[in-house]
Image 1 (cartoon, rainbow, N blue to C red):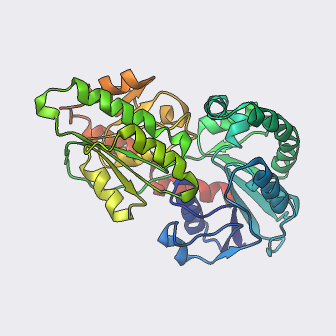
Image 2: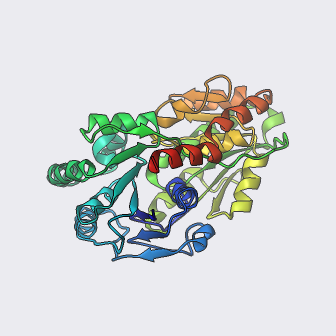
Length: 370
């Protein structure tokens, strides 16, 4: 039976795009459909699949554009056979493709239902950056969105959540039951190299909360002795012009310090080298759905200092493969304590082995083709 995949946006290098690639490979997908495709800005591996853009939706996230996105996806008809399997990759909006596309088996791979509606922590952070008008418009948007969202999810034959955290959001949002399949990372055989820099990796977008990494690092540097004065912080990840204001604010916080380095849109090889040689990884995302970065860090034998919230609580073992923190002070203290600690190298690698690409392939094939 032919398998087709639909993902609303494929235009950057992020965890969702990695999972789409894994789904396409593991399920031997015939085609990947998307409504916004930027091949130059996403992973090169997409060239190994037939990616077809159907329709066109904006990337901008104003309320007007989100209404347009919702309607366009709702009315989009995909050129797929009714006897095929359709796998929908979604973190919001993608589920609307089910209204005009019902196949023999329709599967949802959910990174999260739309966070601004279903994640109170992310919602509070989002609201504090905006004014009263935004809150009023949000309430007008929320009611119809939730109504159609529930209808869309009811049309899936199977919903797969990428973590227990996301499964709970789905249940709390009355979007039905789901099974959990953790995304996987490629396992490597790293050497215990620990250079004097902390790595914060991920897309340059507000909820990744890189300002916490910067402020914690500045606090850390103010407390360490002369032996550690040459420690650096490297912030590396996918960048899109739509987030230019956020990047500018991060550079303002860092005050053009020579020990804080920005690496925009690094190649896969550059990113692997950063993981392999860093001292530890800082993961500051707000209530992250699952979080591939902590697992990737552990695969390279590196401890993770992370916020004690979201999916990271399912992957990082506090005090063994990293530290789970609550604020800037906790982060700085954890960085100080890890300063000369390399004992967890093997434990991190073993922990990452539970979240391998092989395990993901085995579980997703069994579920989808059952």
